[in-house]
Length: 147
Ligand code: RB5
Image (cartoon, rainbow, N blue to C red; front, side, top):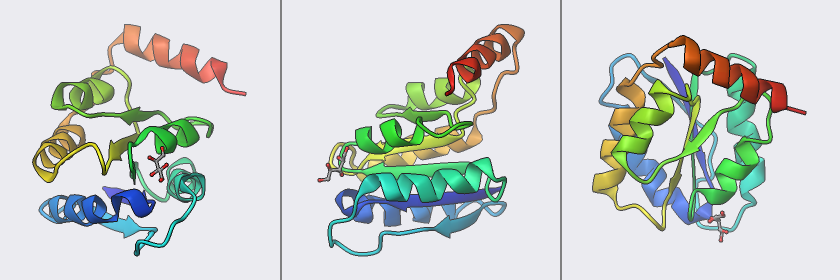
């Protein structure tokens, strides 16, 4: 599975830590679109880079990080085909996959320490969409809301 990851300046350190987790999965290929330093960048540009790789099929999943994860998740969910979940706990991460089939995970570099982020990322990567008809139906209704 290919995973595209990106952050703004508010979460560069957590991005590097999340990449360490991703590297433990033999079947995961990582594409890091940046940013790579602490100079301020605008998070919608990073969100667009990551999400474009998801909607064009280059990558299966995306991980976005900013200070809170909020800006990234708002920006990502503007893009047709993206279901981005901002998760600060493991339960939400699992549910975002099982019920919402989230294809992008957002994390807050100024919110989460590495320990919780590590557990959230592992849970999100290893939980499958349930495929239940009721969840498919609801996702279809979300897709119908897209402009
Ligand atoms: C950047 O200072 C900050 O606004 C950004 O990282 C993010 O938290 C926005 O939601």
